[in-house]
Image (cartoon, rainbow over all chains, first blue to last red; front, side, top):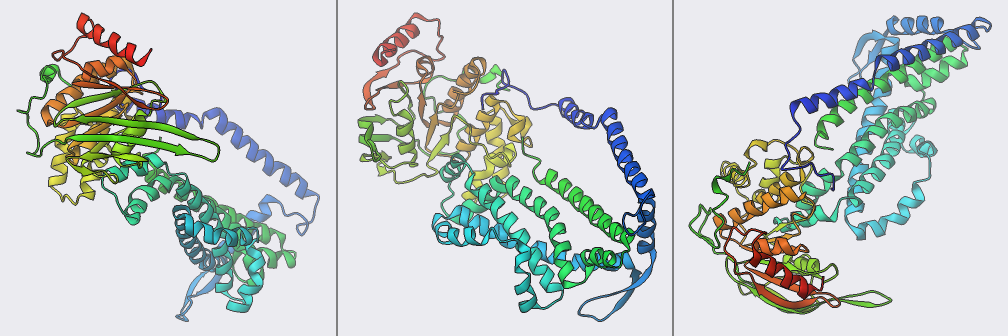
Length: 289
Length: 271
C-alpha cells in the first residue's frame, strides 16, 4: 500500500473516472477493431476458398453453414414441456437448444452451489479440509465424462444423466475457486472484524470471508458457465438429445453444414451467457481496485 | 477537510468536548508481560517482563527499534495474541481476546474493500446490533469527526492513504471503545499528510476523551503526540524507560524543548 497519493488526497474525480472509461474503450481502438474485422474476414475467406474444392460433406462453406443455420432456426418443430406433456410450437434449433438448457441450467446451478459450498467449508475449516482432502485429490483428476456410466445406470439415458455430468464439471471448477478464494482471505481483515465484535464463525464467513473471496468465486462461476457448454455437448452425445447430440447425429448423416451450424449455436450461446455474466460480475465486484 | 477551525483545540485531556457518551476511558495495566516464540530450532524472546500502566484519558506512545516487540505488545493488548507470561488488564479485567472495548487502527488500514466508507464505519455497529436510524446517525457523526462526510459512498480504492486511515479511525471510534489502540497508523502516509493527521488525532482525542495507546518507530511522532512515551529496547523486547513529555500542545518541532526530548529518546533507543 505504498502507492499513496500525495497530500490528504481526493477521491477519484468524475473526470478521472471518465478517463478510465475512455482508456478502456481505447483498448478497442479503431485500429484494433479494424484488425479484428480483417482477421475474421480472412478466416471466412480461407474457409470459403478451401470449401470450394470440397464437397459439402467434407467441408461445408460458410454460406452453406449459414443457410443450414437459417433452416434450422426457422423449421417448425414442437417443443414438449417436461412433466406437463404439453407441446408448444417452436423451431428445430430452438427445440434442441431448450433440450440442452434442460441439462445445462440445472447442472450448472447444482454443481456451482455444491462446489462453492464445499470450497468454502473446506477452505474455512482446517479439520473439514483434512478429512476431505484425500477424497478430493482422488476424485479430482477424473474427467466429468468418465462418470457417464454411472449417470446412465443410476439415472438412465435421459436429461438427468446429462445434468449429472454437467453438475460434476461445474462442481470441481467452483470447488477449487471458492477454496482458493477462502484460503486467500487476509488474516488482517479477519482480525479487524474480530476487534469490531465478530465472534462467531458464521458471521465471519458471511460478512468477511465470502465478500473477500467473491472475486475468486465469481471467476469460478464464470469459468464454469463456459466449461459447462463444452461438457453439455459431450454429455449429450451419449444421452442422445440436445445441441450436442445434433452435432454428432447430423455429422453421422454427413450433413456437415447442419453440424457446423449447431457448433455455431454453442459459440453464440456461450458468448451471450459469458457476456451477460461479465456484466453481473462487473457490477458485483465494482469495489475492486 | 480538517478546517483549522478546531485545529488548536488539541489542548491536553480537555473533556469538555462533544463526546458522544459519558463512558469513561479505560486504564490499561501491563504486568510483567512476557512472550516467547518457540520453533523447533530455537526460541525467541519477543517480550520480557514488560510493565507499565496507562491512565484514564492518557495518550501514550510506545517507541522502539524494529524487533523490540512493540507490535507483539500491541497484538497482545488487542487480544489477537496470547502472552506467555504476565497479563494485560483493562479497567481491572484481564484481556482474553479481541473486543470492542478496544478500538484498533492498523498501519495497513484494514478497510473492507467491498464496503463503502460509511459501510466500513457501520461494521462494528452492525455487530453491536445498533438499528437504523441510530446507526446512520452515528456513522455520520464519526465521518464528520474525521472530516470525511463528503465521501460516504466512496469505496476504499478511491481514497488516498490519509483518507483511508481517517476511515479506519472513524470505524474504530464508532463502537465507542474505551481505549484506542493504534499500530503505526500513519506509517504508510506521506509526511505532509502525517502532520495533518497528527493534529486531527489530537483534536479527536480531546473531543472524545479516549485513552490512546499509539505504537510507532518514529520518535518525533511520539514526542508530538504523547503525554508519556514508553521507550522499548530489543533483544529481548523490554521497557527501557518511560518518558513524560511535558510540553504544551500544540507542539512545534522547531522548539528547543521538543528537540531535547527527541534527542533524549533517541539516546535511549541507541539510534
